[in-house]
Image (tube, rainbow, N blue to C red):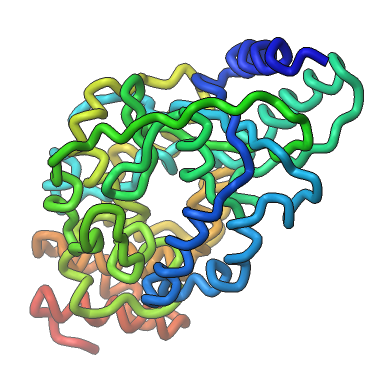
Length: 350
């Protein structure tokens, strides 16, 4: 079989399915695995026990799919607009949701397209050994995408592309097909430290060194218990994820607006008010966020995050009344954050 010609066709089929870039990497992650082990040794993964539990699988693609020789890495842009976001971040009455989470759950979109790509390959060459991944199994998607030539790892640890910045999702196909591997892309961050300097919680401890325990994305999504009191004021109005390090990155001037309708904002999450979202019932939360990545944190953590943001909001009768309405909420986690927020507004506790 002419595998070089097949690789070219795979790139073309990927583009037809809506991927903006497709690259091919070998399966050697020894260097990335060593960096992962160092990061885990520092304890910077916080409550993400699964990172340590499946570390060996992440560094060895063949452990996930025996016989893996190559990884097909695919990029799909998600930014519905490249408009300035700082006005939303500086308006304490508004809720800030990271851009990637405002539309449909990307896992579903990416996995469906990857499966379609595999079906197209199989239709051409017959059955082949493969496994589709999109945050669905332990994988090191950024190092793999970098090896596949889709970009380089920025100092904030996200993948960067000269042509597309960083507003994109990644997905992978592990396969035993001996496709020709692409050349990695050299890093182009130079001496820039804007992502490090802007981090509200100083979670980026240095180039390529992220302490997840301080990261707002981790705190509002992965962290299951109480958010440390010292970090709550620094979270501002960010209720799900954080985009600051991407917003200041000079390479994002080349980012592209998505053509995917699934990634357009739903439920007004690009302009929602904190008080409005905090008033949602659990039934409303489940109904409105069905098909959204946000739904996986559950209603309890949704209210926890909103309580923190309301604690950081400008004091007003509406904000205090909203918090009062949840002061006796059944969840101890929510109650503790609500009471902290009320204290921030100088409102006496019941």
